[in-house]
Image 1 (tube, helix red, strand yellow):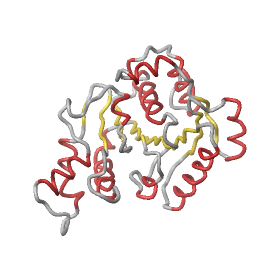
Image 2 (image 1 turned 90 degrees about the horizontal axis):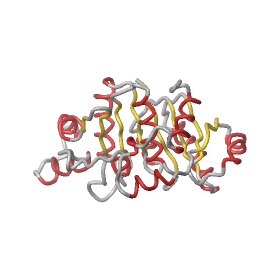
Image 3 (image 1 turned 120 degrees about the vertical axis):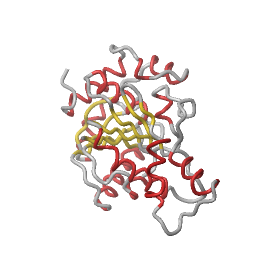
Image 4 (image 1 turned 180 degrees about the vertical axis):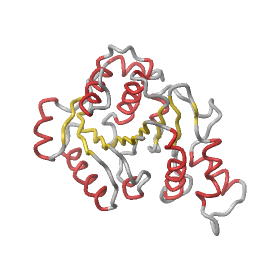
Amino acid sequence: MKTLVTIGRGGTGKSSFTALMAKCFIEAGFAPLLLVDADPDQNLAEMLGLDLKEAGKATMAELIVDTFIEKGGTTVGVSPTERIESRLLANGLYEGEHFDFMSVGTKWVEGCYCMPNSALKAALESVTKNYQYVLIDSPAGLEHLNRRIASKVNDIFDILDHSKKSLDHVKRAYHIAKEVDMEFDNFYLIGGYRFPAELGSKAEADLKFKYLGKIVADEQVDDYVLNGKSLLDLPSDNAAFASVKAIMKATGYIHQ
């Protein structure tokens, strides 16, 4: 089992990259996958053409509210992760033909995401053994690294935009990952839609991480996202998909 995590500042294209990465694996025959949306904005489901409510599923945060708030439960005494894990898997895991999916959702009460994140981590540890690949779409902030939703991963992909803040984000993310003893094999750089391709080698030299390439900006992708269509249904010769496929070939995951 391999766990791949996508991070980066907001608006760099993390969710679309994760969806297109999933398309690469599906077309290569590596299915089913587990796709995890750890971003409260819940963009990944939309990129996959998935409506959780329509599918009869809920986010982790919604299940926690229902279990501990609306039904008068308590979070004291027994570990919330132990009490809710079965509900998360039964009611929070969408199972599809090519991929399964779960989402953290919007925070359940004022304050931090500690409980949803802990519940997600417990659920992930329980189900990941059933998959060849687990793809995690992370929020724009770095809190998930502090809380270690996934404490051991294979590859981290940081999506860059054309700002200094994006480069600073890479440094902070790497520092936090090491500080909290998050285990990972590779930390990669990827140029987002707006990232100038000619800056790739400079970013690699300055940040000391391997630059895998740039995600090509594509009007067809924009149209699919605008109209809520699944990026998995893009034609195989789509320019953005082809660029992501080239990136995955550079990692050695895809060979054709």
